[in-house]
Image (tube, rainbow, N blue to C red; front, side, top):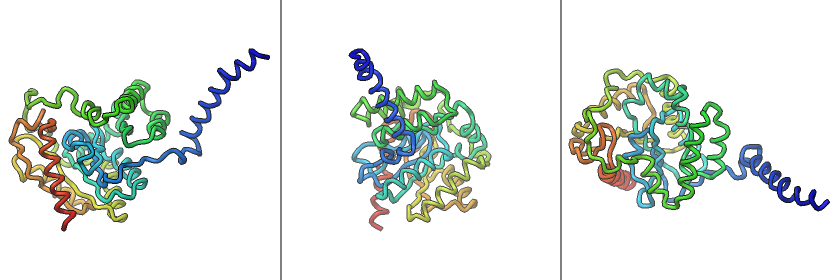
Length: 295
């Protein structure tokens, strides 16, 4: 009898506890613990791929949450932003980086190819509840186990390291944080402007989200993050914005940012800012946000 009681205490009770936790996280009661709460001062969202991820600094001094993520297309980032807005009524603006490569047919592979399934995950434990990250880990069936393990490593890394800003910098730049444009070749980068033919699913995700945001009194601002060697106003921005306007994308305002794109020291390659460049660009966007708020 004593051994039975010891077995129940040491094995059955913990097992039942784990089962209850799993049910709460993934079952019909998940809504009880499934709330992504952002700090009240964070009233703007940044979405897009690695371009805005490397261009917008994070931390308490910046009035936004940067959800940009390497390789992420609008098919994933727009539902992510919508979900956050629905749970955080203080958000009143979304800033979208419309990189030229987002408007290309190869986005179909970014949505459906196994290599890119990790793009649906949120690895931002500093703003997400553990419940959300756990649900993403167990429910996203198309992801391989190796992909899930990489995501879990990122989640645990942010949770263990209380200085999440530094952790995010390591994720977004890695060894390129202070690299100065010496990757070979260091040219104009994307040639996506040769033909703007967006993947239907990716474009529809962006279009539907913008319409939804405008209908819910959320301002939608569009930018194109800097590319090396293109002086402002950038021809890339003009062509991308003209395309979006021709397709009647619901955007509150398009912004041509006068960034010193010919300054090699601000880039680690042709399409991505290093930390020094991000500091300059983030300052320009913050000043723009402040000026818009006083209009």
